[in-house]
Length: 320
Image 1 (cartoon, one colour):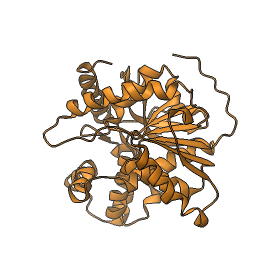
Image 2 (cartoon, rainbow, N blue to C red; image 1 turned 90 degrees about the horizontal axis):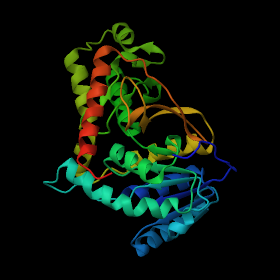
Image 3 (cartoon, rainbow, N blue to C red; image 1 turned 120 degrees about the vertical axis):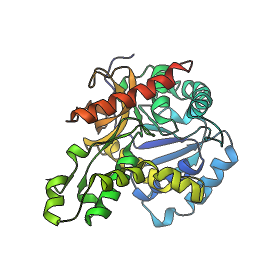
């Protein structure tokens, strides 16, 4: 992999590869945020990308100035971040391994076309995101800090929301993480959950509500099945992930050094190596500048290791 050391020039151009529900919703949220000076949509179906661009441009009178247009892969050349939302959706009867195989083949076509133009940072959103982040890293040969998966940023937000409803506080005052796979083996870090800096167990005693193990299990079950519930009712998850991506992009473009549970390549992280999964990562203009070792109890360590094994088993069935 290449040597770390990128020359950043304050560029605020974001390229989005994939103009489906997630890509177009993210483009809309990004336009409203005012973060990007340029937003380019790239899709194999050029008319779809052009249609979204026309619609977005008609709203520019209501937001901060930006340039929004459709293009091809050459538009990745001077992008600060390329956000990859393209890929197949899981079909009824398909296994996760089937989906992984389909999207790995798609990424084998997409990633070389992107890195040909040397964009600075790659943000992978397509599922299974941990597998595709690993594939992107291997194909691109970028430094691991420059390849980011959206990982469990949305799962973490769901966790905070569910806890806020239970504790009757603002979600912004809840601090908690979901780590590991963005999927069924994800790990809730109960041991470090807090409300406004107060450990969750202490807060629960203070508010005199019954926070039983059964209730905790129900909260996590609702977090883990949230996407299934949304997809069952409307067919796709797009709004919350669009906002999550804006938060990640904000951390990069504004050089915030903020911490998010993004998917990244790890080496000897609680004896986990050579796999991409979500851990706390410090994000700034360099991408993932540093991976932070979360303080986990023994049960959480074992669950994180089990989550890594799930991902490695999937990777072992793929030609990467």
